Image 1: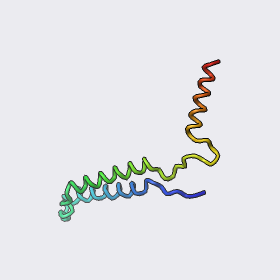
Image 2: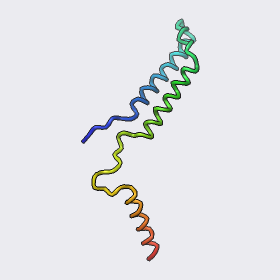
Image 3: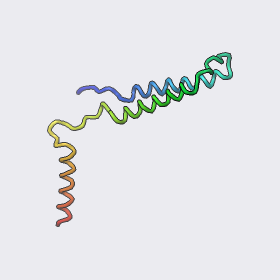
Length: 92
């Protein structure tokens, strides 16, 4: 069986970096590391936006999902079969 990569790994890493940067900025305002408090707000906003893009990519393009197995008819055949079964049940 083929191992598929986890699509959430880049998202998790980026969220960890973003939270760490937010924490460093918050802690540095009350310590001698005042230069860390000079991180601009637009930079943090860009990091949050990248986080949202990575989450959307992981949701829209899950690389671990197998659409169907060999020999299965597919989603449209299953929908057609369910629809036909529903109409046959109503006709009786």
